Amino acid sequence: MNGQDDDVALSQVAGAIAEPARTKMLCALMDGHARTSTEMAVIAEVSTSTASAHLARLKDDGLITLYTQGRHRYYSLAGPSVAQAIEGLMVISRNSAKAFVPSTPTRLQFARTCYDHMAGTLAVTLHDHFIEAGWLTGNDSYQLSAHGDEAMVELGIDVATLRTQRRRFACACLDWSMRRPHLAGALGAALLQNAVRREWVIQDLDSRALSVTPKGRKALKARFGTTICEP
Image (tube, rainbow, N blue to C red):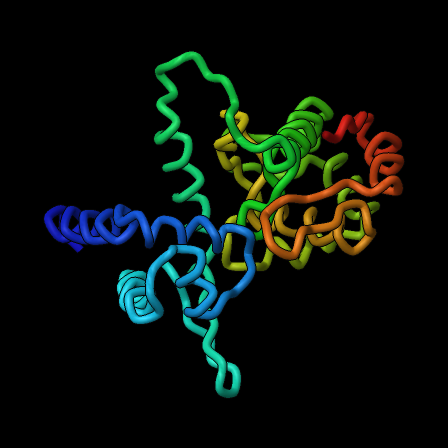
């Protein structure tokens, strides 16, 4: 693609995101769950036929993916890069030039999913700990140090397999409620999966919010020195 093609493609995608009903749909899919067109119609507060048209536009522009399972059709975000772009737009929409006062609902601000990885105060705190402990090296795109590699393997994360994936291994994702980075990429997704599997956190069925369990509080304190003061 040449520069002009890039401009046209960018404006096409921007137009798809700009419509309020489609924006609601995309934001709803940020929790990583797939939803039906009927559910998306309710979320966007439009008729089912209008929702179908919006979903078709989002699919054509590569922002969502359609899955068919028997007679059911489900929609989800097309991938982590789409989620990261939406997260970035959320930051811009809050007008960072003004004095920043978080207005995110308290539970979502504390801990939530950002597509397939963790976001919010807890995620930013963990990211900062990984940096300060010297486990993560680099600026925007991270690698694990020898100590970081050992720490992740001790958690039960298959670091070697993560490095073979086609997606970025580990990177910073600007948190829209905290205006500071949390950890994304294959490693960020594996950390969330690990926390859920160990029952350190529980994800709400109908929102992006994450709740830290008593078991999780003890484990996070013991392993990362992170004191949890959950709202």
